[in-house]
Length: 137
Image (cartoon, rainbow, N blue to C red; front, side, top):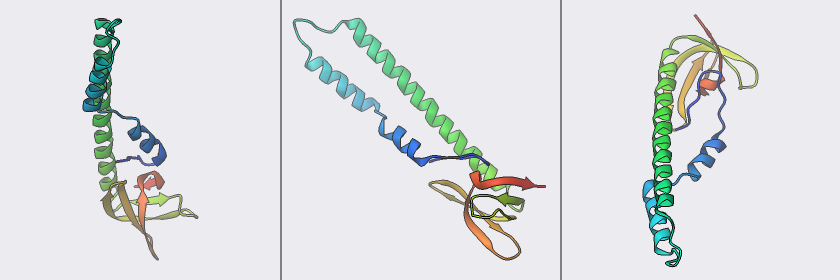
């Protein structure tokens, strides 16, 4: 789930590009075994090279898990930020002219939390946290 903070920017294409470059542990083992099966018997690959590849994959897997944990933490932080804005006066950018009003609802979607902001006349829905430019006390 993409996550953005108040005043932040987000590019969905960056997330899609990163997710397409990932290889999971099962795919790596399959690739590793295929490499073993088709190596030249007259010049086998050195054991140190295999151990190096396994160590690299382990490091990559730990990095992936850290990245996932960070994404989860950012998602929880984003949700907390959105809920804390309930009943607060905010200014919103990105809707043409600047808009200000009171946050009356928060909804949670796959794209992150979305706010509903109401002024004296109308209610704007689907506002992302990155569109909030000012929070008034």
